[in-house]
Length: 225
Image (cartoon, rainbow, N blue to C red; front, side, top):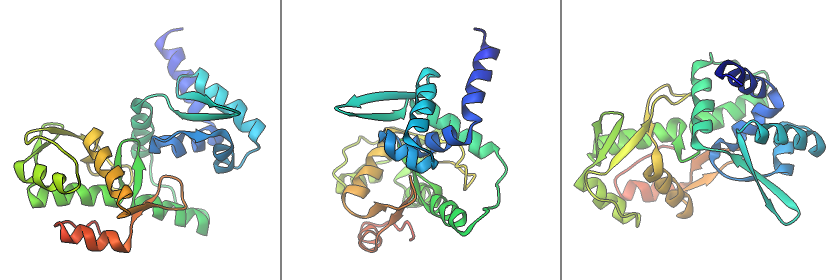
């Protein structure tokens, strides 16, 4: 199979609304049971299993059996990056219903993207770090400063000044770069563990809690609400 045939095969996998809906739900980097993915896609479990098998065979997903259940996650971070880049290239589509508008607005406000915080919250995080001097711009990303290492220590995250933090080139809703990579993932997980951020009802969505707004302000950062 040559590269053109491989691209066509991948394009066909992505071209089905049901498969794409399940893939986009998994961009948060977590493993989901097949039943939850079926509900997200609005299809029967047996139909979802068929589509999930195709996505595994196509190298886009991996399956992990746990007892009687099967859990699925994106095969690599490259799959998440591909989906985000395709979304960034696509023209914004108007929501067709109130539910669609609410889902779009929730994801635009804040969402998890495999290993980092994205949407307005991800952009606000990046802006705050730059304004506070916790990072400085570097080619393809940012570099942690001494002040940044001290601030991260308040979150019980240990880094050395000079550590490189990659950037996610373009946020598909905000159209500007933001922090990505393992450190951005660690910060996102820590903010959720502290109860400063919490997951919303829309898959991948997150928002700042009331306590998070107060505590983040105390340590010199505001992500908004």
